[in-house]
Image (cartoon, rainbow, N blue to C red; front, side, top):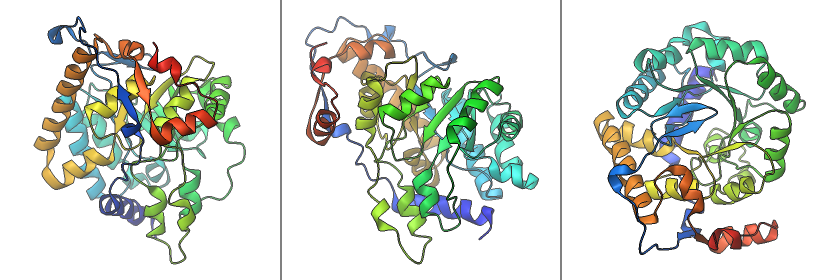
Length: 349
């Protein structure tokens, strides 16, 4: 199967399989504040990722590109939505354009449609420094997103099987690129040991990409004759991954993604220590099924709802949500307990 056909397959199967909603946010509960002493009109959502300023802690996460006219149209529409709502955006893996120059336009359209926005370039962990520089230059990117997708590659019939020297490649990218490097999982989550080691080689931003959103194991299994179903439920949930990141002893920013559906999910992510949240599958479904105007409306509603939640919780900025007490229940609590992560500190702050 050609790379272009595979990209279109991914989009179609992502829409068909949907999102698992097993991210763990139902296990997190805010403690009510009867006197929050906040004013909705004074809430600021201004946020930063790797030193880059955003008008809100919302960004459209990596989805597509490299699938010809269909993915070009999707990226153009997403970029136009991002421009209208003033949110950041990541493109899908640009390896297709590096291997096949005729695919460049399906990525370049993002910068053309969102000329003043924050845009992340994207390649997989096999990328060399020269390839990463090409990806950044291709879309005049403000940051570079390196995605980790070992399980997806293993399930993918034509996927990679050799993942040695990944840390060495990441370190070269951190040292050689002039833009921030964001290391991102793609739906299997991250543990604190991995985040700690990434910090030790200079990475300053990770996207934990937790289990519970788009399931790439299921997508790739749809493309296989002999299924590897044991990978369909593999991974660390989004909330458990955020708790893992919260105990890392290093200067590193955490981005939340993996099934985020609402302002409540985002508020909980920020309260668990994330500096921003990435939405992908939910936005793609709205765009394809209901159109750009509906997606713009939905993003603006998330922005409004987040400000409402922050007002209720007594937080005037996203950073202040890390002072808000919350309770961790259910499977997320059991995960944290067995991993030696103390949730009491969250409930008593």
